[in-house]
Amino acid sequence: MLKTRIIPCLDVADGRVVKGVNFVGLRDAGDPVDAAIAYDAAGADELCFLDIHATHENRGTMFDLVRRTAEHCYIPLTVGGGVRTAVDVRALLLAGADKVSFNSAAVADPDVVAAAADQFGSQCIVAAIDAKTVAPGRWEIFTHGGRKPTGMDAVEFAITMMEKGAGEILLTSMDRDGTKQGFNLPLTRAISDAVSMPVIASGGVGTLDHLVAGVKKGGASAVLAASIFHFGEFTIQQAKQHMADAGIPMRLA
Amino acid sequence: MLTAIIDYESGNLHSAHKAFERMAREVGAGDVVVTGDADVLASADRVVLPGDGAFPACMAALKGHSGLYAAMVEAVEVKGRPFLGICVGMQLIASRGHEYTLTDGLGWIAGDVTRIVPSDPALKVPHMGWNDLVIDVPHPVFDGIKTGDHTYFVHSYHMEVATPGERLAHVEYATDVTAVIGRDNMIGMQFHPEKSQTTGLRMIANFLRWTP
Image (cartoon, rainbow over all chains, first blue to last red; front, side, top):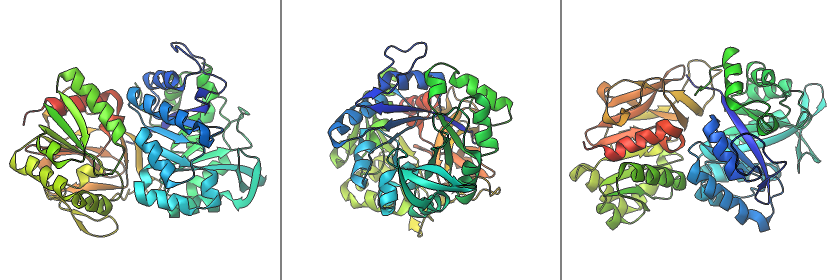
């Protein structure tokens, strides 16, 4: 049976983890590669690196990180942030990323997703959607870290991403991100029901029950979280066991 | 001893290269190269065919490197070198692929590569994530591996194997999904062993030690 995935996400800026990562056994809390190795050992199902202020100048730093991570970690790695073209996708895949996520560039031109999916296959193209509630049951796409409204409906955009060949959706609720109040479940459910590919729920996890709700109520295939793991509030195994106890199929160590 | 991972510009070869290098070091299996050079491939003792993307595009890319293609066929069919196909690299050895358009495969293992249609419509395609293997036929590549061990999958098509004894393992996804195929000197894995942590690394090591 396919298992629900837990994906720790590391926000990276200039080659360092932003806010740091604080759990036992880590040599350097700011080095994303050290954190990745620790999460691999802890039983994470995948890893995600998000380059939070990706600029042309610091791309080399990200490639180096991805390369070093791929040398030590044998679980899938998704890399996002500043990905604009199929050329960017190829460079990241060659460095050792397994999946690459598009965000603002896909909103500006959904065909970049089609071009990348045609060239490299849907399996490695993730569409990252940042959505904010604008009315009950209505969510709008925001870009530029949630600052810029686009007027586009999130559910319709998710369907567009599916049609363009994305293999997975990484859905972040801008309302919930950083609040620790739990995923935006109606949003997660609406997108998950609208598309046939897997949806990763992101934004707002504060408790292990939130992870359970994202899957059971939101319909997510995977859950992404950052701070609850980075600061040692919960281990990956505690999260997996809690979800398994709630009846969700998990890959336990 | 030389293991050649075929580079025909499909897929993420960096991960595979690192994983095979590490396990070759551990089991003393010599060198691992990623190569698009027919002469290098001809000198290899083991052949690995990776692949990501659509079946017709991968087949066209492989055949487009005509010298490389010929060297691979010779290594596997004539010289009997151990062969491992991964993901679409496994699917290409089937008789036919049905993705987008009907495409001939290498025909090394009889079967058709068809879209996964879960009987439960709530199940998503691609089949993406960790699934637990059910071993159907014992094989040296499963040394130290048992039914219930997890590997990482990401695919929308899978192989329906024509000869039951050539499907070595499967996983369940509302329907049976082929996970490992094999015959003589050939093995195929639908999942990514290079992304399947200790279970995958163990299977890579087993392949590198395998003398069919």
